[in-house]
Length: 281
Image 1 (spheres, rainbow, N blue to C red):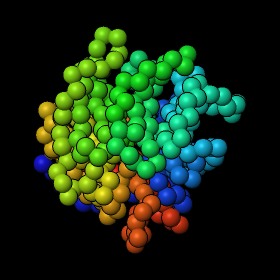
Image 2 (image 1 turned 90 degrees about the vertical axis):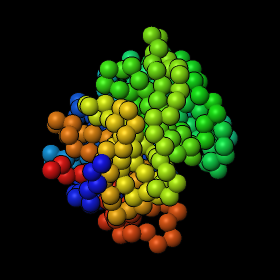
Image 3 (image 1 turned 60 degrees about the vertical axis):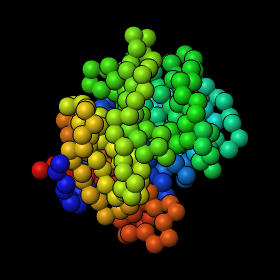
Image 4 (image 1 turned 60 degrees about the horizontal axis):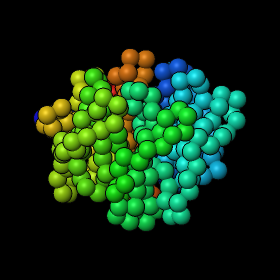
């Protein structure tokens, strides 16, 4: 196992409380990321340093680019579409009191797998639901507490998933119709090392996960072996994604919400990093 220290570059300085959901948009060459509790969608262009901001009317748990342009949003009350001309419409609206959208991911077949959680994080209060482009919704997991990282192996045969309080990264087989079966643990984060949050999968099929209250990002091999740890000075690392022209830059988001005395780089207050890009050696 390789452990590396804090060789990172602050990519974005932005005031936020719960940074989340970094996503690379290859069509625009920009990074998308969120401040969930301040209902903001941010963009960052690493080539120019230019930043953009959109405010949403509800807490937003995930944002992904659409194939034809525009964005899909996992909001408090359901899945919304933002068209290229900034027109908003609902793809699927299903408000549940005390619940909001959280992390989401786009499957190889183009469907959106969107998670939910209760604001009070009540056990079993969340879901993982598959949405197709016509608005059809199919809830595949209905006993989730904090639905977080979701991703697929490079060949599309496996899906990885995190329900954060379990401390596990689980793996499923992907069935012929794009659904999942045969859930089992890939890896468990030991007590005291934090909780797995967002994840991404690299070209080698290894799974990277951010550790909430763990101050690190870990990489696990497809067999579940821990083979790399990137240590950061901030405790609440929330999510990770690869981006850049060759998809080799690892972007991270962090949070400062709930920290009584946060590190100067924790989360997104003042000049605190909104996204942290790991410098590859």
